[in-house]
Image: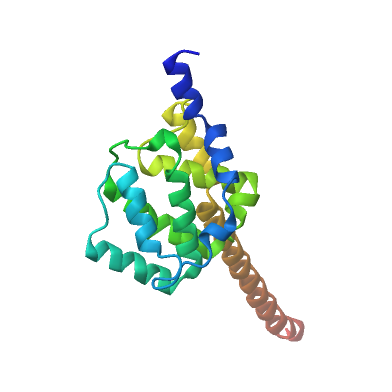
Length: 196
């Protein structure tokens, strides 16, 4: 197998999904700032492995605060670190802020709506996490182009799906309120019309 084919296989979606599937949930339990698993240390080591240096004190404090606010967010951040420890990404010289932005934003939001275990146990959620991690650092699976990879991530996006569900539920509630109000008006108006 040529070097290019080896690299493409190594960066294949299946390779990343297999890597995530191998994660033992015990590895990410429990993320405590001062306990056995220190989330900031894991993030710092991951950044270093990606060629981004280590967390500074302010960034480490922010990671600790996020883990204190939401154990699930801390667990999902650690799971993303597992994805980033795939051999294909070692020493890639990626932009540290993109990795940190993923932790501060989408991962914390995802952890609030999807159980962390689902990102290992369910195929679509596993694929979503892998794609989010890769997209955050400007990568995509080797067997896909950037447009296909972005389209597929959008199709799997739990945050967007959750927003659509919430919007739909709110629209249904508004429509029901309008129907009730119209029925009440009609009921009040009916005796008036009958007397004329």
